[in-house]
Length: 252
Image 1 (tube, rainbow, N blue to C red):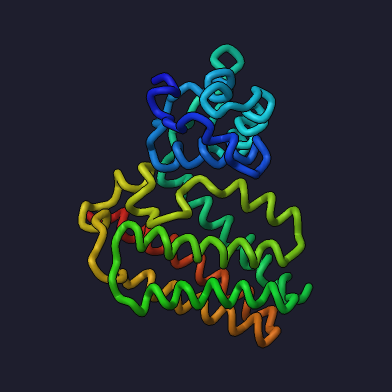
Image 2: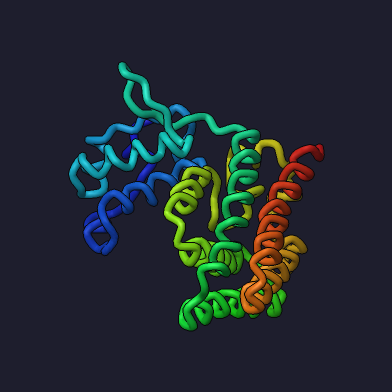
């Protein structure tokens, strides 16, 4: 499949972005892969991607190297880069790794200390997510909105840990969507999940309500400067997504 058949970026789209070119390429191609819009086996030609995004081939090559390290792409001397076939086991392993890494980062953030403005941003992410849950309604758009706050919550905690090794290692676990329900959006998972778990409900799902409660517990532990509790709470929180996924993927 030609990449042009899969990616529709639009003229000038890349030029309107402020982030570095490599990050732009990495973000766009990663999302296409994890959502299945760019299926396994798709050839990732640097020249074609560069032309589509309006960038040089240098940031594209850098992005492809990162995608390979993340397990989303593979490289062969004679064939170049291609989208890798991601299996359910890959997803579960990635969540296991992320749980340990984020938990340690959460504990370190308490040890390092939160600046008032940082903690206020964390609290805002929790409040915004809680407000969505209280409204009760649910849809694809609402799901994406909640997951944006979820992403902000998790990424801020890791940044405040001030540990570059943990941040880089976590990036290597991003082989599934972080902007919606993995059971519904990730092809490597969805093919194992019964249809009823891949349908958008009209009210807030139980796992979202539980996750929002976990966010509040983690926030409270950070506020209390209890590094041990914060670390344990984050570990349990991330592992719940793995347990849920493993449970529903076995139901037929």
